[in-house]
Image (cartoon, each protein chain N blue to C red):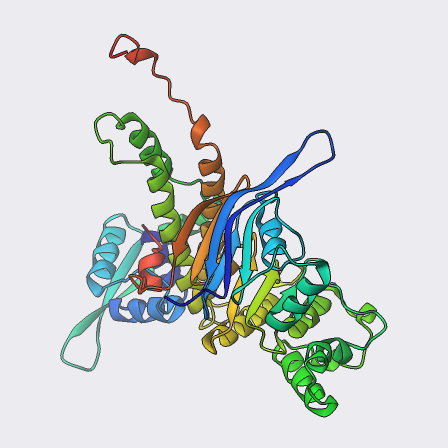
Length: 185
Length: 245
Protein backbone atom coordinates (compact mmCIF):
# COMPACT_ATOMS: atom_id res chain seq x y z
CA UNK A 1 0.00 0.00 0.00
CA UNK A 2 2.89 2.32 0.87
CA UNK A 3 4.18 2.74 -2.67
CA UNK A 4 0.69 2.93 -4.14
CA UNK A 5 -0.07 5.90 -1.86
CA UNK A 6 3.23 7.55 -2.80
CA UNK A 7 2.31 7.04 -6.44
CA UNK A 8 -1.15 8.51 -5.92
CA UNK A 9 0.39 11.55 -4.26
CA UNK A 10 2.83 11.94 -7.15
CA UNK A 11 -0.19 13.11 -9.15
CA UNK A 12 -0.47 16.09 -6.79
CA UNK A 13 -1.24 16.92 -3.13
CA UNK A 14 -4.50 15.49 -1.82
CA UNK A 15 -6.44 14.69 1.32
CA UNK A 16 -7.30 11.15 2.32
CA UNK A 17 -10.69 10.92 0.67
CA UNK A 18 -9.30 12.31 -2.57
CA UNK A 19 -6.60 9.59 -2.50
CA UNK A 20 -9.21 6.91 -2.12
CA UNK A 21 -11.18 8.39 -5.01
CA UNK A 22 -8.06 8.31 -7.20
CA UNK A 23 -7.41 4.72 -6.17
CA UNK A 24 -10.98 3.60 -6.92
CA UNK A 25 -10.97 5.32 -10.32
CA UNK A 26 -7.72 3.71 -11.37
CA UNK A 27 -8.31 0.21 -10.14
CA UNK A 28 -12.08 0.16 -10.64
CA UNK A 29 -13.31 -3.21 -9.42
CA UNK A 30 -9.94 -4.88 -9.88
CA UNK A 31 -7.91 -3.82 -6.89
CA UNK A 32 -8.08 -5.12 -3.38
CA UNK A 33 -10.76 -3.43 -1.33
CA UNK A 34 -9.27 -0.33 0.24
CA UNK A 35 -10.99 1.56 3.02
CA UNK A 36 -10.36 5.05 4.19
CA UNK A 37 -8.85 3.72 7.42
CA UNK A 38 -6.08 1.95 5.51
CA UNK A 39 -5.34 5.14 3.62
CA UNK A 40 -5.01 7.16 6.83
CA UNK A 41 -2.94 4.50 8.59
CA UNK A 42 -0.59 4.42 5.61
CA UNK A 43 -0.40 8.22 5.47
CA UNK A 44 0.42 8.27 9.20
CA UNK A 45 3.29 5.83 8.74
CA UNK A 46 4.61 7.67 5.71
CA UNK A 47 4.52 10.94 7.61
CA UNK A 48 6.33 9.38 10.57
CA UNK A 49 9.07 8.26 8.14
CA UNK A 50 9.24 11.73 6.62
CA UNK A 51 8.05 10.61 3.19
CA UNK A 52 4.93 12.80 3.19
CA UNK A 53 3.96 15.99 5.00
CA UNK A 54 0.63 17.70 5.52
CA UNK A 55 -0.78 21.17 5.78
CA UNK A 56 -4.12 21.87 7.38
CA UNK A 57 -6.59 23.47 5.06
CA UNK A 58 -10.04 24.62 6.00
CA UNK A 59 -12.27 23.04 3.44
CA UNK A 60 -15.11 25.53 3.58
CA UNK A 61 -17.27 22.90 5.25
CA UNK A 62 -17.26 22.16 8.93
CA UNK A 63 -13.94 20.32 9.16
CA UNK A 64 -10.34 21.22 8.57
CA UNK A 65 -8.64 18.80 6.23
CA UNK A 66 -5.10 17.60 6.13
CA UNK A 67 -3.76 17.93 2.63
CA UNK A 68 -0.82 15.58 2.08
CA UNK A 69 2.08 16.03 -0.32
CA UNK A 70 5.24 14.11 -1.15
CA UNK A 71 8.41 15.30 0.56
CA UNK A 72 11.74 15.21 -1.23
CA UNK A 73 12.54 12.05 0.65
CA UNK A 74 9.18 10.58 -0.42
CA UNK A 75 9.87 11.40 -4.06
CA UNK A 76 13.29 9.77 -3.77
CA UNK A 77 11.74 6.65 -2.18
CA UNK A 78 9.17 6.43 -5.00
CA UNK A 79 11.93 6.86 -7.57
CA UNK A 80 14.03 4.17 -5.97
CA UNK A 81 11.08 1.76 -5.92
CA UNK A 82 10.24 2.46 -9.56
CA UNK A 83 13.88 1.92 -10.59
CA UNK A 84 14.14 -1.43 -8.81
CA UNK A 85 13.12 -4.61 -10.64
CA UNK A 86 9.80 -6.20 -9.71
CA UNK A 87 9.69 -9.58 -8.02
CA UNK A 88 9.62 -12.45 -10.52
CA UNK A 89 6.27 -14.27 -10.34
CA UNK A 90 7.64 -17.37 -8.68
CA UNK A 91 4.80 -19.46 -7.37
CA UNK A 92 4.06 -20.33 -3.80
CA UNK A 93 4.12 -24.12 -3.97
CA UNK A 94 1.01 -24.53 -1.85
CA UNK A 95 -0.30 -27.43 -3.93
CA UNK A 96 3.08 -29.10 -3.96
CA UNK A 97 3.28 -28.92 -0.16
CA UNK A 98 -0.14 -30.50 0.08
CA UNK A 99 0.85 -33.21 -2.40
CA UNK A 100 3.94 -34.11 -0.39
CA UNK A 101 2.02 -33.97 2.88
CA UNK A 102 -0.73 -36.15 1.39
CA UNK A 103 1.91 -38.73 0.51
CA UNK A 104 3.50 -38.61 3.93
CA UNK A 105 0.16 -38.78 5.69
CA UNK A 106 -1.14 -41.75 3.70
CA UNK A 107 -0.82 -44.28 6.59
CA UNK A 108 -2.39 -41.85 9.05
CA UNK A 109 -5.13 -40.41 6.80
CA UNK A 110 -5.98 -43.17 4.32
CA UNK A 111 -8.88 -41.22 2.81
CA UNK A 112 -6.54 -38.44 1.65
CA UNK A 113 -5.34 -39.00 -1.91
CA UNK A 114 -2.70 -36.90 -3.68
CA UNK A 115 -4.81 -37.18 -6.82
CA UNK A 116 -7.69 -35.49 -5.02
CA UNK A 117 -5.39 -32.62 -4.07
CA UNK A 118 -4.72 -32.11 -7.79
CA UNK A 119 -8.31 -32.47 -8.95
CA UNK A 120 -9.67 -30.10 -6.31
CA UNK A 121 -7.11 -27.51 -7.28
CA UNK A 122 -7.92 -28.02 -10.96
CA UNK A 123 -11.60 -27.43 -10.26
CA UNK A 124 -10.78 -24.20 -8.47
CA UNK A 125 -8.44 -22.95 -11.19
CA UNK A 126 -10.93 -23.78 -13.95
CA UNK A 127 -13.76 -22.03 -12.10
CA UNK A 128 -11.60 -18.96 -11.50
CA UNK A 129 -10.55 -18.93 -15.17
CA UNK A 130 -14.17 -19.26 -16.28
CA UNK A 131 -15.18 -16.33 -14.09
CA UNK A 132 -12.21 -14.21 -15.17
CA UNK A 133 -13.13 -14.80 -18.79
CA UNK A 134 -16.63 -13.52 -18.11
CA UNK A 135 -15.20 -10.44 -16.46
CA UNK A 136 -12.59 -9.91 -19.17
CA UNK A 137 -15.47 -9.09 -21.49
CA UNK A 138 -16.41 -6.19 -19.23
CA UNK A 139 -12.95 -4.62 -19.04
CA UNK A 140 -11.58 -2.23 -21.61
CA UNK A 141 -8.26 -2.65 -23.36
CA UNK A 142 -5.47 -0.92 -21.54
CA UNK A 143 -7.39 -0.50 -18.26
CA UNK A 144 -5.74 -1.51 -15.02
CA UNK A 145 -8.47 -4.07 -14.36
CA UNK A 146 -8.12 -5.46 -17.89
CA UNK A 147 -4.39 -5.97 -17.43
CA UNK A 148 -4.93 -7.59 -14.03
CA UNK A 149 -7.48 -9.97 -15.49
CA UNK A 150 -5.06 -10.93 -18.26
CA UNK A 151 -2.23 -11.50 -15.79
CA UNK A 152 -4.40 -13.68 -13.58
CA UNK A 153 -5.80 -15.65 -16.52
CA UNK A 154 -2.32 -16.39 -17.88
CA UNK A 155 -1.07 -17.47 -14.45
CA UNK A 156 -4.07 -19.75 -14.01
CA UNK A 157 -3.39 -21.32 -17.40
CA UNK A 158 0.21 -21.96 -16.41
CA UNK A 159 -0.95 -23.49 -13.14
CA UNK A 160 -3.35 -25.82 -14.97
CA UNK A 161 -0.61 -26.92 -17.33
CA UNK A 162 1.70 -27.53 -14.40
CA UNK A 163 -1.03 -29.61 -12.71
CA UNK A 164 -1.08 -31.88 -15.76
CA UNK A 165 2.66 -32.38 -15.37
CA UNK A 166 2.18 -33.05 -11.65
CA UNK A 167 -0.47 -35.64 -12.29
CA UNK A 168 1.63 -37.30 -14.97
CA UNK A 169 4.57 -37.56 -12.60
CA UNK A 170 2.54 -38.44 -9.54
CA UNK A 171 3.69 -42.04 -9.60
CA UNK A 172 7.29 -40.89 -9.77
CA UNK A 173 7.13 -38.24 -7.08
CA UNK A 174 9.43 -40.12 -4.77
CA UNK A 175 9.85 -39.25 -1.19
CA UNK A 176 13.13 -39.74 0.61
CA UNK A 177 12.00 -42.04 3.32
CA UNK A 178 15.40 -43.25 4.45
CA UNK A 179 14.78 -41.65 7.84
CA UNK A 180 11.83 -43.96 8.21
CA UNK A 181 13.59 -47.14 7.21
CA UNK A 182 13.72 -48.49 10.75
CA UNK A 183 9.99 -48.04 11.16
CA UNK A 184 7.37 -50.48 10.00
CA UNK A 185 8.17 -53.03 7.30
CA UNK B 1 -32.77 -41.61 -18.57
CA UNK B 2 -32.72 -40.95 -22.28
CA UNK B 3 -30.02 -42.26 -24.55
CA UNK B 4 -27.10 -39.81 -24.79
CA UNK B 5 -26.50 -38.28 -28.20
CA UNK B 6 -22.97 -39.57 -28.33
CA UNK B 7 -21.60 -42.40 -26.26
CA UNK B 8 -18.26 -44.16 -26.32
CA UNK B 9 -17.46 -47.21 -24.23
CA UNK B 10 -14.01 -48.60 -23.42
CA UNK B 11 -12.35 -47.19 -26.51
CA UNK B 12 -8.81 -48.34 -27.22
CA UNK B 13 -6.71 -47.42 -30.20
CA UNK B 14 -3.11 -48.39 -30.82
CA UNK B 15 -1.07 -47.03 -33.70
CA UNK B 16 1.26 -49.60 -35.21
CA UNK B 17 4.42 -48.91 -37.09
CA UNK B 18 7.36 -46.81 -36.08
CA UNK B 19 9.86 -48.25 -33.63
CA UNK B 20 7.15 -49.58 -31.35
CA UNK B 21 3.39 -49.58 -31.04
CA UNK B 22 1.83 -46.51 -29.51
CA UNK B 23 -1.29 -46.91 -27.38
CA UNK B 24 -2.98 -43.61 -28.17
CA UNK B 25 -6.14 -44.45 -26.27
CA UNK B 26 -6.76 -46.96 -23.49
CA UNK B 27 -10.25 -47.85 -22.25
CA UNK B 28 -11.78 -44.42 -22.58
CA UNK B 29 -15.51 -43.98 -21.98
CA UNK B 30 -17.43 -40.75 -22.42
CA UNK B 31 -21.03 -39.68 -22.81
CA UNK B 32 -22.40 -36.52 -24.36
CA UNK B 33 -26.05 -35.75 -23.68
CA UNK B 34 -28.14 -33.29 -25.69
CA UNK B 35 -27.08 -29.75 -24.80
CA UNK B 36 -23.78 -30.78 -23.20
CA UNK B 37 -20.62 -28.79 -23.79
CA UNK B 38 -17.59 -30.95 -23.12
CA UNK B 39 -13.98 -29.82 -23.45
CA UNK B 40 -11.26 -32.43 -23.73
CA UNK B 41 -7.88 -31.12 -22.73
CA UNK B 42 -4.42 -32.39 -21.92
CA UNK B 43 -0.83 -32.16 -23.13
CA UNK B 44 0.01 -33.01 -26.74
CA UNK B 45 0.08 -36.74 -27.35
CA UNK B 46 -2.44 -37.44 -24.57
CA UNK B 47 -4.93 -38.92 -27.05
CA UNK B 48 -7.47 -36.11 -27.19
CA UNK B 49 -7.48 -35.77 -30.99
CA UNK B 50 -7.61 -39.55 -31.39
CA UNK B 51 -10.69 -39.61 -29.14
CA UNK B 52 -12.39 -36.92 -31.21
CA UNK B 53 -11.67 -38.75 -34.46
CA UNK B 54 -13.17 -41.95 -33.04
CA UNK B 55 -16.23 -40.08 -31.78
CA UNK B 56 -16.70 -38.60 -35.24
CA UNK B 57 -16.26 -41.93 -37.01
CA UNK B 58 -13.17 -40.73 -38.89
CA UNK B 59 -11.19 -43.60 -37.43
CA UNK B 60 -12.16 -46.93 -35.89
CA UNK B 61 -11.19 -48.18 -32.44
CA UNK B 62 -9.34 -51.45 -31.89
CA UNK B 63 -11.73 -52.16 -29.05
CA UNK B 64 -14.84 -50.49 -27.70
CA UNK B 65 -17.98 -48.98 -29.14
CA UNK B 66 -19.16 -45.60 -30.41
CA UNK B 67 -22.87 -44.83 -30.52
CA UNK B 68 -24.20 -41.76 -32.28
CA UNK B 69 -27.90 -40.84 -31.97
CA UNK B 70 -28.78 -44.38 -30.96
CA UNK B 71 -26.83 -46.07 -33.75
CA UNK B 72 -23.59 -47.97 -33.54
CA UNK B 73 -21.03 -45.99 -35.53
CA UNK B 74 -17.73 -47.84 -35.34
CA UNK B 75 -18.87 -51.05 -37.03
CA UNK B 76 -20.25 -49.29 -40.12
CA UNK B 77 -18.57 -49.00 -43.48
CA UNK B 78 -16.79 -45.80 -44.41
CA UNK B 79 -19.67 -44.61 -46.61
CA UNK B 80 -22.28 -45.36 -43.93
CA UNK B 81 -20.24 -43.48 -41.37
CA UNK B 82 -19.93 -40.55 -43.76
CA UNK B 83 -23.72 -40.48 -44.05
CA UNK B 84 -24.23 -40.55 -40.28
CA UNK B 85 -21.60 -37.83 -39.89
CA UNK B 86 -23.33 -35.65 -42.42
CA UNK B 87 -26.68 -36.19 -40.77
CA UNK B 88 -25.68 -35.62 -37.15
CA UNK B 89 -22.29 -33.95 -36.86
CA UNK B 90 -20.48 -30.74 -37.58
CA UNK B 91 -16.74 -31.17 -37.62
CA UNK B 92 -13.87 -28.68 -37.44
CA UNK B 93 -10.58 -30.40 -38.10
CA UNK B 94 -7.13 -29.20 -37.29
CA UNK B 95 -6.48 -29.59 -40.99
CA UNK B 96 -9.32 -27.44 -42.25
CA UNK B 97 -10.51 -29.36 -45.28
CA UNK B 98 -12.06 -26.45 -47.14
CA UNK B 99 -12.87 -27.21 -50.77
CA UNK B 100 -10.26 -25.16 -52.67
CA UNK B 101 -12.28 -24.84 -55.89
CA UNK B 102 -15.32 -23.33 -54.17
CA UNK B 103 -15.72 -19.85 -52.72
CA UNK B 104 -15.88 -19.34 -48.96
CA UNK B 105 -19.67 -18.95 -49.12
CA UNK B 106 -19.92 -22.07 -51.30
CA UNK B 107 -18.00 -24.05 -48.67
CA UNK B 108 -20.24 -22.89 -45.86
CA UNK B 109 -23.43 -23.54 -47.88
CA UNK B 110 -22.35 -27.10 -48.57
CA UNK B 111 -23.86 -28.84 -45.50
CA UNK B 112 -27.16 -27.01 -46.12
CA UNK B 113 -27.25 -27.86 -49.81
CA UNK B 114 -26.55 -31.51 -48.95
CA UNK B 115 -29.60 -31.37 -46.68
CA UNK B 116 -31.69 -30.22 -49.62
CA UNK B 117 -32.07 -26.61 -48.52
CA UNK B 118 -32.62 -24.18 -51.40
CA UNK B 119 -29.74 -22.08 -52.74
CA UNK B 120 -31.14 -18.77 -51.61
CA UNK B 121 -31.81 -19.88 -48.02
CA UNK B 122 -28.47 -21.63 -47.89
CA UNK B 123 -26.68 -18.46 -49.04
CA UNK B 124 -28.49 -16.32 -46.47
CA UNK B 125 -27.68 -18.67 -43.58
CA UNK B 126 -24.07 -19.04 -44.71
CA UNK B 127 -23.61 -15.27 -44.79
CA UNK B 128 -25.23 -14.87 -41.37
CA UNK B 129 -22.89 -17.43 -39.84
CA UNK B 130 -19.83 -15.93 -41.54
CA UNK B 131 -20.92 -12.56 -40.21
CA UNK B 132 -21.19 -13.90 -36.65
CA UNK B 133 -17.56 -14.93 -36.94
CA UNK B 134 -16.43 -11.63 -38.41
CA UNK B 135 -15.46 -13.02 -41.82
CA UNK B 136 -18.51 -12.10 -43.96
CA UNK B 137 -16.28 -9.97 -46.21
CA UNK B 138 -14.45 -13.10 -47.38
CA UNK B 139 -17.61 -14.74 -48.77
CA UNK B 140 -16.64 -14.46 -52.45
CA UNK B 141 -12.95 -15.22 -51.98
CA UNK B 142 -11.28 -18.58 -52.53
CA UNK B 143 -10.10 -20.29 -49.33
CA UNK B 144 -6.47 -20.01 -50.45
CA UNK B 145 -6.75 -16.23 -50.45
CA UNK B 146 -7.49 -16.16 -46.71
CA UNK B 147 -5.17 -16.10 -43.73
CA UNK B 148 -4.93 -19.19 -41.54
CA UNK B 149 -7.08 -17.57 -38.87
CA UNK B 150 -9.77 -16.61 -41.39
CA UNK B 151 -9.79 -20.13 -42.83
CA UNK B 152 -10.26 -21.53 -39.36
CA UNK B 153 -13.31 -19.37 -38.77
CA UNK B 154 -14.75 -20.32 -42.17
CA UNK B 155 -14.28 -23.99 -41.25
CA UNK B 156 -16.14 -23.36 -38.00
CA UNK B 157 -18.95 -21.56 -39.88
CA UNK B 158 -19.29 -24.60 -42.13
CA UNK B 159 -19.41 -26.91 -39.10
CA UNK B 160 -22.20 -25.05 -37.29
CA UNK B 161 -24.28 -23.58 -40.13
CA UNK B 162 -26.67 -26.54 -40.32
CA UNK B 163 -27.11 -26.75 -36.52
CA UNK B 164 -25.80 -30.31 -36.24
CA UNK B 165 -26.79 -32.53 -33.29
CA UNK B 166 -23.19 -32.44 -32.09
CA UNK B 167 -20.36 -30.10 -33.01
CA UNK B 168 -16.95 -31.76 -32.83
CA UNK B 169 -14.08 -29.28 -32.91
CA UNK B 170 -10.35 -29.96 -32.80
CA UNK B 171 -8.43 -26.89 -31.53
CA UNK B 172 -10.98 -24.42 -32.98
CA UNK B 173 -8.97 -21.44 -31.71
CA UNK B 174 -5.56 -22.88 -32.52
CA UNK B 175 -4.51 -20.47 -35.26
CA UNK B 176 -6.29 -17.41 -33.87
CA UNK B 177 -5.11 -14.27 -32.13
CA UNK B 178 -6.88 -13.46 -28.88
CA UNK B 179 -9.55 -11.19 -30.41
CA UNK B 180 -10.50 -13.76 -33.06
CA UNK B 181 -10.45 -16.52 -30.43
CA UNK B 182 -12.88 -14.45 -28.38
CA UNK B 183 -15.21 -14.16 -31.41
CA UNK B 184 -15.14 -17.94 -31.79
CA UNK B 185 -15.80 -18.50 -28.07
CA UNK B 186 -18.70 -16.05 -28.21
CA UNK B 187 -20.24 -17.99 -31.08
CA UNK B 188 -19.81 -21.27 -29.22
CA UNK B 189 -21.39 -19.77 -26.08
CA UNK B 190 -24.39 -18.48 -28.05
CA UNK B 191 -24.91 -21.78 -29.85
CA UNK B 192 -24.57 -23.65 -26.59
CA UNK B 193 -27.25 -21.44 -25.03
CA UNK B 194 -29.47 -22.39 -27.98
CA UNK B 195 -28.95 -26.04 -27.05
CA UNK B 196 -26.10 -26.99 -29.38
CA UNK B 197 -24.11 -29.96 -28.07
CA UNK B 198 -20.37 -29.39 -28.36
CA UNK B 199 -17.31 -31.55 -27.89
CA UNK B 200 -14.12 -29.62 -28.34
CA UNK B 201 -10.52 -30.60 -28.00
CA UNK B 202 -8.11 -27.91 -26.90
CA UNK B 203 -4.81 -27.52 -25.12
CA UNK B 204 -5.91 -23.99 -24.16
CA UNK B 205 -7.35 -24.08 -20.65
CA UNK B 206 -9.07 -20.74 -21.13
CA UNK B 207 -11.12 -22.25 -23.95
CA UNK B 208 -11.70 -25.42 -21.92
CA UNK B 209 -12.98 -23.39 -18.96
CA UNK B 210 -15.83 -22.05 -21.12
CA UNK B 211 -17.29 -25.56 -21.34
CA UNK B 212 -19.61 -27.10 -18.75
CA UNK B 213 -17.53 -30.24 -18.39
CA UNK B 214 -13.74 -30.45 -18.66
CA UNK B 215 -12.16 -33.83 -19.29
CA UNK B 216 -8.40 -34.00 -18.74
CA UNK B 217 -6.54 -36.72 -20.60
CA UNK B 218 -3.08 -38.02 -19.80
CA UNK B 219 -1.24 -40.81 -21.58
CA UNK B 220 -4.27 -42.09 -23.48
CA UNK B 221 -6.61 -42.21 -20.50
CA UNK B 222 -9.09 -39.92 -18.82
CA UNK B 223 -7.26 -38.57 -15.79
CA UNK B 224 -9.94 -36.26 -14.48
CA UNK B 225 -13.39 -34.95 -15.23
CA UNK B 226 -14.60 -31.63 -13.80
CA UNK B 227 -18.10 -30.22 -13.84
CA UNK B 228 -18.15 -26.43 -14.12
CA UNK B 229 -21.85 -26.02 -14.84
CA UNK B 230 -22.98 -25.76 -11.23
CA UNK B 231 -23.12 -22.53 -9.27
CA UNK B 232 -19.61 -21.70 -8.25
CA UNK B 233 -18.64 -19.49 -5.37
CA UNK B 234 -18.91 -16.73 -7.96
CA UNK B 235 -15.52 -15.33 -7.14
CA UNK B 236 -15.40 -11.62 -7.72
CA UNK B 237 -12.53 -9.86 -9.35
CA UNK B 238 -11.66 -8.35 -5.99
CA UNK B 239 -11.50 -11.78 -4.39
CA UNK B 240 -9.52 -13.34 -7.19
CA UNK B 241 -6.96 -10.63 -7.47
CA UNK B 242 -5.47 -8.92 -4.54
CA UNK B 243 -3.03 -6.23 -5.37
CA UNK B 244 -1.05 -6.22 -2.19
CA UNK B 245 -1.64 -9.62 -0.72
